[in-house]
Length: 61
Image (cartoon, rainbow, N blue to C red; front, side, top):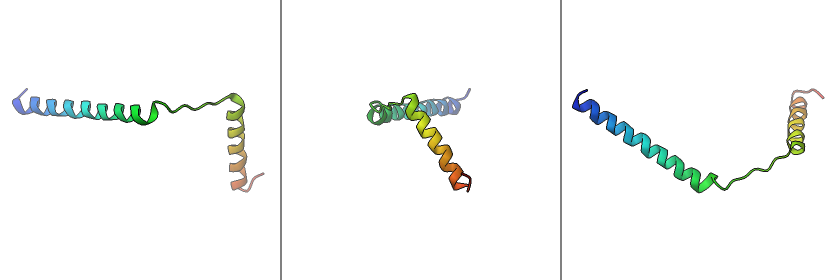
């Protein structure tokens, strides 16, 4: 492995680590506290509503 190969590898590792750090910081700032409460009744209501709306859009009832 030559000098340029090692330098490229080190640069790529640095870039990947920096990207992971940015992703973790973004998750920590914006997603960490987001919570979605779902029970089976509300999920069923949303799913059956989505199916019936899609049928109406296609002209089926």
